[in-house]
Image 1 (cartoon, rainbow, N blue to C red):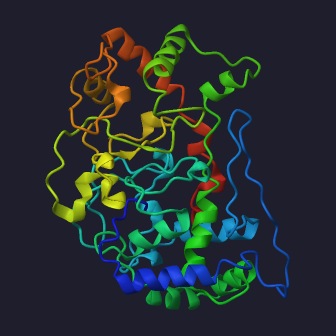
Image 2 (image 1 turned 45 degrees about the vertical axis):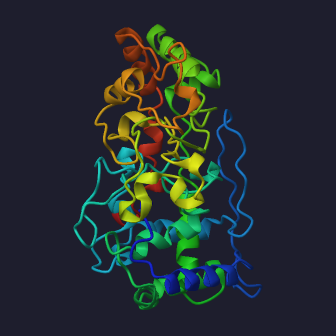
Length: 365
């Protein structure tokens, strides 16, 4: 689960995790005496995508990805052995969960953040979580693992549980050349998550000018409107600028409850200019990933467009890109234009992504 807030993760555990990761940065493809050579993997980058920046400290291998896939779906990662990463990231929903604020975690309390979809993570270079509280895929995994409201797993106990499984012992030895440790657990999961590539929607085939690929007149109108009104944040073929914006869903951030969670990016940077800013999600598969926003407050895309058209809240950090109504906050859209945008967004659904057996639960095949 990627929505963790570090609650329940003690300073000592954080330091231990970081030190462990630092000590494991070398030899990410196994020790020289590994009996069976590993098989490096290059990501299958869609032709209309930019090239991702490879992770220098966690080289992708077939074996590492397979191990990460197994861990992603393993309920032993939670304290009660009832939750896996996939419990909040369902493939058929583009690895989102369909809930505003989940309460399936170990404490059964409502979380304060909406579970983001996991799409094209290999291109994310500017932080994870809605506020960018983690710098890379590897480190972010520690938060939901240890959070008392999510998986609430003791990392030492997790290592012991996995060491009791001979297959895991062999796989970790093969991939990393050493005994099971928490740093390598999250590195394997990150390898698998970097293969979550979605770039084969009808829009993509049209963008690549593949034979027979077309968009309807309404879809083309919607594409034009998205390019005109939304591309400032939902940029490029990834449909996200990988940055943080205050999109006007709130106008007051004076409530400092819950460790500053409602202050957005400011919680991490302590810069006043970052108050109310949250990570831009991709528009890819957006019709599968409702509800929307960092707290899941909008149930439908129609609700989202209604917000932008007439309910943008003004604060000192409201993004300048939203002042599209003659200098007033908001994006003027007619009912027909809203419908055209929704029609286009449907063309961003990637059926091959949500049905890709290489990303599904290996225990069910």
